[in-house]
Length: 162
View 1: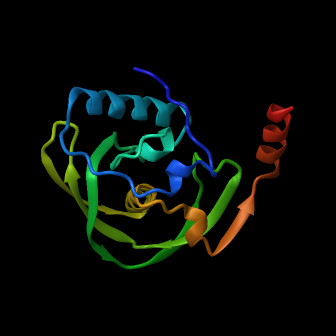
View 2 (view 1 turned 180 degrees about the vertical axis):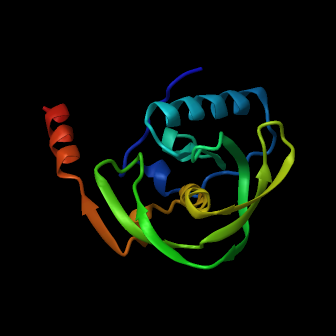
């Protein structure tokens, strides 16, 4: 497997509506594995295909209970509301407080092409919503009620740019 480059804010692919996956092929399964490797290497809890430069409706999430892969995910039901902080691997050094549904039911395909339906709450629900937003070209900063900057992260990026 491979660790892919995570594209950063400003990359056009992050603002596009991602294309549906028409067939779960060997290439799609390889992309899913590479996305999981990339997410784990970056210490993330979720990753969407546009974040690795691929305009396809694929997300991976792992909030500590094992990896979840969803292809062509859709939120079927949403209930409750809570505000909590979020960050994004494509927007390093910034955090924001975002209002999201407390519970969701999401449908899609797994990496074997089988239909799945998941009920999620808490961090799992938040991560699913965050990643599905990526598939629609929406970033957490578009929904954030307040954004904070991590000054240490900013300084590190300036050093890398030199």
